[in-house]
Length: 179
Ligand code: 5GP
Image 1 (cartoon, rainbow, N blue to C red):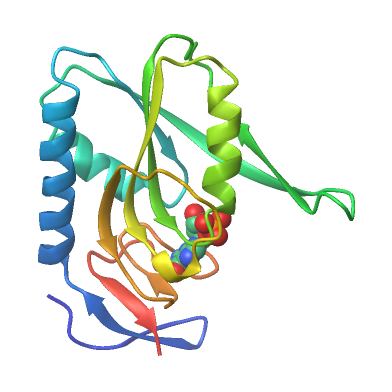
Image 2 (cartoon, rainbow, N blue to C red):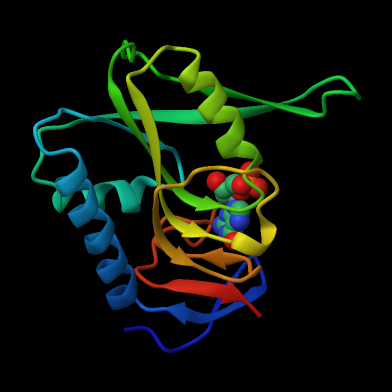
C-alpha cells in the first residue's frame, strides 16, 4: 500500500482510499449484479477512459453471462442557451431490447450521466442501470437513479484507479485526493 503523497503536474495528492477498500466495494457491487441479473445476459457499457480499471475488476467478479462494450463521451460547446452537449461515441452494438449496465468511474454533478442515459434510453433497451465506483452526493445536480454505488465521497478531486489529473495518475492502485 502506498503511504506517500504523489505529485502530478506539480499538484500534490495525498493517499485517500486504499486498494483494499476499493476492492471490497467492487466485490459488493459485483455480488449484487450477479444476483440481480441471474438468468439474463446484460451488456455492460463501460465509459472510457476513467472506468477501465473498475470495469476490468468488476467483470472479473461476475459470474453471469455478459457482454461488454466501451464508449466515450464527447463534449461539444452548444449554443449559449443549451450549454455543453455530450454525445456518446463508439457504441456499435444494437442495444434494443438489451439489459444495459453503464459502468462509470465517478458521478459528480451528474450532467454526463444524465446525457448518457437519455441517449441510451432513446435506443429502446429493455432496461438501463448504472454502476459507478464513486459518487459525490453533495455535487449531484440531477435526480438520477444510480442503483449500484461503490463508494460515496465528499467534494474532493480524486485520482488513481483509472481516474486522472490532466492525463496522469490513472495507473495507481489506490485513490488519492488533491491536497
Ligand atoms: P459530471 O458530469 O458528473 O459532473 O462529471 C463526470 C466526469 O467528470 C467524470 O466522468 C470524470 O471524468 C470527471 N470527474 C468528476 N469528478 C472527478 C474527480 O474527482 N476526479 C477525476 N479525476 N475526474 C473527475
